[in-house]
Length: 275
Image (tube, rainbow, N blue to C red; front, side, top):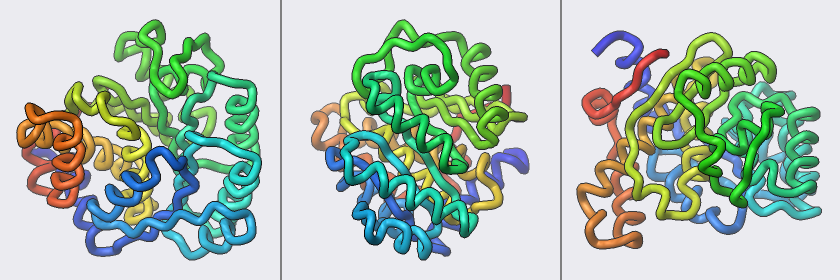
């Protein structure tokens, strides 16, 4: 194991030692799983989406996760207020543009957030990221469209260009996850197809990023990589433990596995490389 892999694996220990408070402005479909996976990895979740307190809560948090899964007139102002509060205090902001490209309202909201908030991490599927990058993109609601998948080299270069443009780290999740900070490109091969059978696994990835970035705000690329490795490895181990039983048991096993994630597991099972 090289030094880079070792440092990434150790990120999980920082999360468990620091127990970062992760403020979520997320969607009501997956909010419970986002809270539980944050707890499982060692963070502390809070979900305060009223405009009257969103900024105050962000001010005491270690990181902020903004998720566009279920938009409404009340929560969008909260996202902007919380994002600006995070920027003022140097708190990492993870932005998950769920369904970007699917409707005018989502597109306008994504543009507003990117215009008014300085984000640390942009996480989405290939369709969402292609839309944000200004490229042609199909849509299947909140899922990636098959027509949008490209080769890893092309995906990596797109992530690299967009990360440089937005001055953030871009994470594109899929069969192989691609991460770039505008200079380096990392490909992560861990994961299992059964993860796509559960709603909210992308949202849970963003929550893990919130925990890892909250614990290591000065090492965003390593933190995002560790979060994706944790999710991918947990998916593999959950399938081994309960995949044959069905989706419900797989979901429980996924949360169980995250709660036992360690630097040793990350180091031994992690499969990633720098492109």
